[in-house]
Length: 443
View 1 (cartoon, one colour):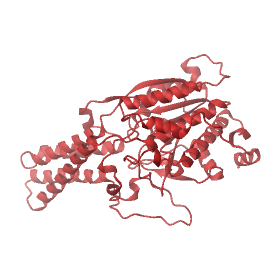
View 2 (tube, helix red, strand yellow):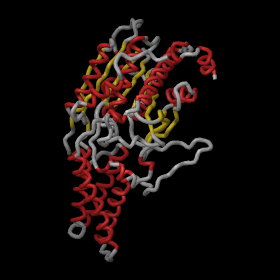
View 3 (tube, helix red, strand yellow):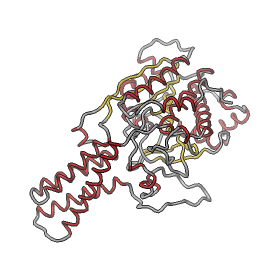
View 4 (cartoon, one colour):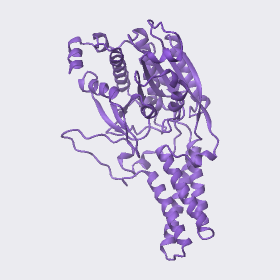
């Protein structure tokens, strides 16, 4: 049975949701991380909030791409070669924004200062010298949740999202005997349209440079102009839209992190240090996690350090991610994911499913750096909750049962990882029934 956490999880979400505008790089984001640090310090953690550099605001990045695209269109007949170069630059840069690299045009904008909250619960039996080399010897379990929120905007409204195929959210592997449900939609990501427009713009400009004529070139230029103008309008709308409360995204993850920390502080791990990390810098960019790995990498050894990422666990059915990425599929390393899958299939935590996640999470940079990591998230019919990034993402939308399930599952996973990292069998304290635990471990 999971110990009762010291703070009511819903009350914590109410508190953090009242913080004004905690977008990446804002005062509200810093206050949320300081709030978590204070709660964990009371539980016996050593906590600190470290600064991290994060990319420019997304509306500015989108607007910059739209501006360069429109400039290239205006130069099609005046300077077609320059138009080709601008179209290619916009396409390559936007492709980099979707994939994470190469990031070209955003380098023209000023970056912001975000931050990460890092807390550590040292094992009482540790007697090693406090040096970087010695610290790497100690097994570590990192529980990660994101601290900031997104702005709302037309792009995230349900009526706009219904224009696209459900793969815009999360794609879930089909289960035996189940029929996949598919919504009517265009079947492609909106970013694909921008890439197509930039490519066609460059091709049309190349045609003009070669002296080609015909009605097709104005049609292509007109299509690209509509796309770039629409992107500019979406950028302005996103910039003007207020930040959401973020009770589900990402208040639920922070609340689960604090609850798990309280449960384990009351009954510490036997082998590993527990690290709690509240990252900043927008989860789709995962810059906060990258900054954390850069700052604390000398203390972490991929051979004995694992990462459990909590993402939007306040509404829906709990899912264990097996991979992530929309454009480049990044499979997670099997150690943590395999243990999580066994817990999910045990049935002791209710309905827990597996999913291939679309989009970037904080487990991605950890996996790329060689760590075994996994993301736990809640989905509704295989998709992210519809309230995300809208004004409906408030405390009333949080399902206490889903949050409690995520806390119980995460604590059980952390304790199982602690036993595995220590090379011992899982005891009854970790998950209840000693007979069932032994059979699961051997099977």
